[in-house]
Length: 445
Image 1: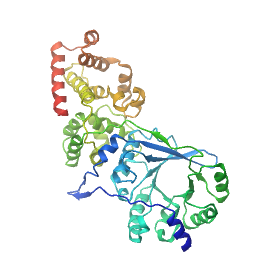
Image 2: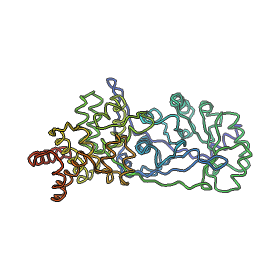
Image 3: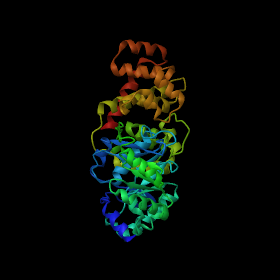
Image 4: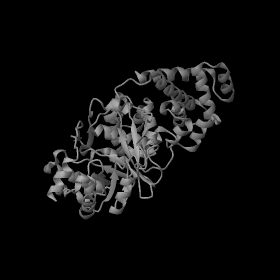
């Protein structure tokens, strides 16, 4: 078996995993520093591909996700987090379908990172690279982190070289072993599959299957799962990414890590539309495990809790963008939300200011996420009544939204129509608009 070890090792190109993150435990609070200079750029230009993994009947049982953004050839903690945040923010779609697992890359440095807290162990497989130069000390160190991740319920996938004796500590942890057909000679397939079956309890996956002949050759050997161009080329998807400002991300992290008053946290979320919308999207993820629909950002904070919010804000901080946001879009969404909130506070109909702000903020959700309104709303964990208002503009909140839009666009006809349905004076409306403009200007400065 020593000869096999040497042969298979030379066929694998192990790239060095660059670590650009540092985590410290200070006063019981996890602080995540900037991961690298390209992290902000990467999340703004994220490009994710998915490729199906099929069974013998060509039924899709899983998808593997690939980060094709401008991070570069090497995976980093930053690129892993960017992929995960965007995948779960979209609630898995368009990256997965019901009852399909997701294979996501896991750099060695990221095995203990907090983004695993937001993934569902029942449906996620961590694809872990081999160690550069197969260093025995590093293999042993990584094995400890692998064991902890697997103990949490996540399954692990490795390249076929994991059956080499030097990786004996990893072999009991393997749930899947990928056989790279581009690096294994046809004559070596049978002994390799036999070694996988003897040394692990893993399911073998043949990757880079490009012909029907290969597919037919592999099935009698006991290979049950397949991936490659024969079944599908990787499908590129480019989700619209809402990247919070670095200033907003820092402020949120500092507030929640110091257990600030919920009013301060809510105010921070209101002043950065990307933070607020992304929080609503993250609540939808299976890893968070919340099913209650929200009616305000304050309720969202209460549902997710400060402990999980601290971890999420650390991830956002690590990947926040230093680039200037679209001030026009940001200002419009925030002004609408704040104006509606102020009107709700003055109204005698006992409207909820938090709900009013949320409706105003999300009135720009189509432009924020770059997709049709109904699709955009499906990505958020919203109360059904709020969804109906945003889709149909009905009721008092719908009339308030129409009023704020008319003020923004200086549309006298729409303003008169909405004004006639509401119980506000012109003075109330003028004051609310001026205060909202000033508040948004301060928030974006």
